Every structure is written in structure tokens, then in C-alpha cells.
Length: 177
Image (cartoon, rainbow, N blue to C red; front, side, top):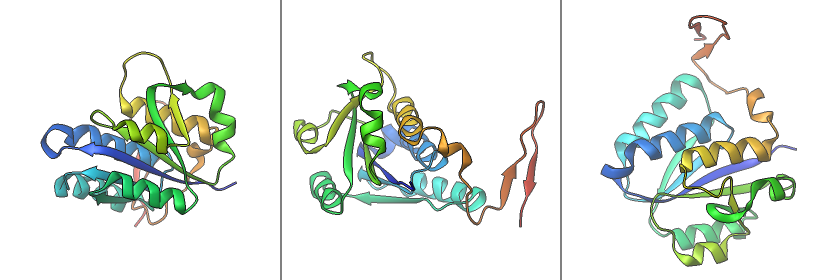
């Protein structure tokens, strides 16, 4: 089953969160999400950086900014997405990954700041990958892998200009165009 996965980044602050949001975007793209929606301060430099990677290494992948998290999440729910909020206080991913995997449209919510209590109530799932403090980047990567059962490793990116050739030693990159 082909899944449509998007990531929702809650609370981006341009100066403070630039690197982490960039990495969340790159992980989202590399592991099969079609876009990241960022609620917070618009960050042209971060978007340009991620768009540049997508242009060189293929897509599709989009970066979008929105102002109102609640309006956007409710809109996604109305469009048939299940909302999977990643929090260390949630149910264990190992107990819910099969159930979540059955859905065709999935929105994974990751925070950068304290998340409104209402996010927990709007979400279909509140999921943890560990019961210890950790990075949203790691939680996102683990979740994307678990719900796609490793199929993200077979993604063929369209319009790529570069491709890595697996190598035991060294780096091999070829230009495709």
C-alpha cells in the first residue's frame, strides 16, 4: 500500500530551531514523507536549503509554513489524515505501529517547544519511541521506519541530478543529468 506521509513541525523559531528543523525536513524527505508543514516563524533560509537538496537529490518534497497549528491539523484530519503526535509521554510505538501502518494518509506531529495540551486531544495517536528525553529527529526517523516497515529504503526519487553508489570504502556519487 502506498502511503502519503506528511510531517507537521509544531513551533519553529527561526534563530533557535534552524538546524533541528532543517534536519527534521531532511529526515522526512529521505525517509518517504511528501512534505513538512512548519507552524511557526517562516524561515526562508531553511526552506531554501531543503529545496536545494530536493532539487539535487530528487523528490517530491515540499516545505510549507502555516500560522495556525489547530486550523491546519483540523484541516488535515478532515482530509482523512490520521494524526500521530510523537511525545515521550505517549503509547509505545511497538504497541501501535501495525495499527498506524494500516492507514494510507498519515501526519506525524513533532514539536520544537512545549505543545499545547489540545494537540494531545486532537491527535488520533500520542506515540513514544522511548520513555526518556530524546531528540524529535530520532523519534521521527524511528517512527517513519516502523510505520513503513523498511520500505522507505527502496524509494526512487524523481528528477534527481545526483545518486549515491553504495561503496564499502569511500564515496561514490554520480551525476544523472
